Image (cartoon, rainbow over all chains, first blue to last red; front, side, top):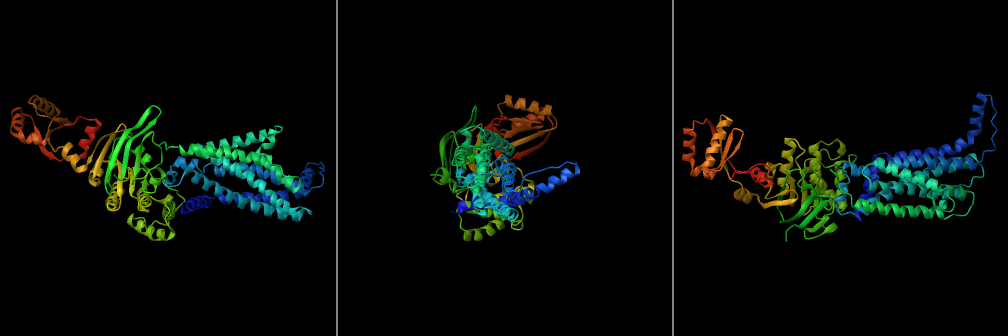
Length: 254
Length: 306
């Protein structure tokens, strides 16, 4: 019990001291606030731009759907990059500088080490997405009457699962390689491939990137589609054991 | 059964054999010095015994236990310890103790004691990134002994330190000998001779010799008499004549070394030879037996005086 707590405590301390948590929270808060505001003021912004160029830009009525679309698309895309950047060194950097040896000679297994990293990743994502969901929910409800706040808050579970899948893949690759940059490039590659696979009929339904679409579908009242969730779980079930297996055979090179 | 037992341990990396059947038995309470040149297999053996890497063959026990269970009995200090720079020294000890299952109340009692013992009390609440090499090494020893392990593995504990840091760490090792079994690798022979009860020499992955330090010096190293001449030519000439007379000697630069017992029995003969040959003898010294002589002999890098 002490051992698991110690591992999680170490990871939480690291997350706070290296500012990873702060970066993620600020990023989430920014998108939570900026998405509804940008959508609301978009006609004014475009008309100002049109006025300076002597052209008239007509756009339709802005609804909460526009705010939601900005939130899901921008947040998920830029958030993926940010998450990869802040997580890619989670194991690889410790291997590169040798600090992982501190854990490896203690009576804790490789699974526990990776498990603690996943648990703190989940905590970090949960805090950030909770903040973004509250900010987005409040501003959208305030600016766009009729916005279904409760379904929106619930729908963020899909965003959480999406980011957790990305984070897990980054950690899994980070356990396999010795340089953080390789973990970042590998995770980016899997994300791009999954995005491309999402365009393929039938098979694409299982791409985890489609979890982002589930946010909009849940708010709009469409039924739950299980395929992206299954795809996300399958991806984690493949990459994490592979990563742990490779990690357990890792040897310092110095 | 010894505190550390290894049987035919092997480690191979594709075509390279890092360890080739290492069998050792080290008794409880021993300060064991593990000697060898760079690349001999010292760090590889320590990494296997600490559970950091797997062996390609053979087996080992620490305190009678194998695998992960054995890890609860060990403390480890790496050659160049890298700890989390964002942690403070005290936090590192807290995390380390908790990972060995120590309770909070026990940690509250033990951590100040260890910080005091290892001389890092004043820096305990500073970030490790700000520590000097010597402080980091002493903190490393503190984290290695905090949980009262049965065995402490120290991988080249003083090789990266300045003379002051080296002296501090060796003093600390001297204090530790009363608490635990110490397995210390090094290539600094003076340090090993000073602190270790038992020594093994490893070369090219095999144990060349394993003895009590006293026995090793008594049985395998002999005191020598050093004759220092004015010129190299005198050294060469004297060496040549002595060898024709069947007197063993070794020459290095301006010096000729003769085993002390041989010199005593043939003292008159040797000195008259020097006098009659008009050789310019500058100095005559007696040198005690050292581990260096044994070490050099067993790794076959320079000829042994015999």
